[in-house]
Length: 179
Ligand SMILES: Cc1cc2nc3c(=O)[nH]c(=O)nc-3n(C[C@H](O)[C@H](O)[C@H](O)COP(=O)(O)O)c2cc1C
Image (cartoon, rainbow, N blue to C red; front, side, top):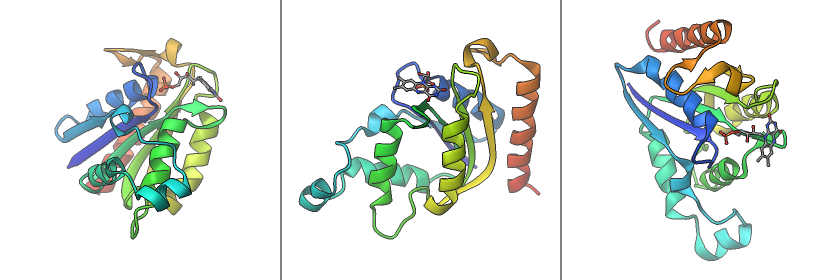
């Protein structure tokens, strides 16, 4: 199985990318690729731009990565209660490719984390509602609150309860592929 992960953030120190790396570590027997959204930075979506110059190649490249995977592991950064601009811009451009839904009807483990006590609950709710209409088959969702207290790079989730919650969800995701 090919797994594609990314944090919905363009921060070089993205905590969401760390959470994706940790979740992906439960799939070591599979092929895992973690994308950096900085490699897909495009001009801000604008209808005039699309009309004049078409869709940037990077949007097609991102779509091809999605199309080549069997499972998406995504963790969204929350900016002012919603998607980061970096993620939303890629989402918007990819959604303009004719004949596709942005997330290619792929199964998805959808997560969010933030340093705050709500753990990105607002962006997670937005995405959970939206993804099915944009071709994301959300199998499970998970939110990790208070990232700095509950996660250590190298160790992963240090809070036993949250760790168990994620492990249960990963089991359920795996069961989707091996019922
Ligand atoms: C412009 C901006 C808006 C933010 N808004 C929220 C917010 O609404 N909720 C929240 O929990 N954290 C918010 N944060 C804090 C982010 O959760 C924090 O920066 C986190 O590290 C983002 O994830 P990342 O490291 O993966 O980019 C905001 C940060 C920025 C820079």
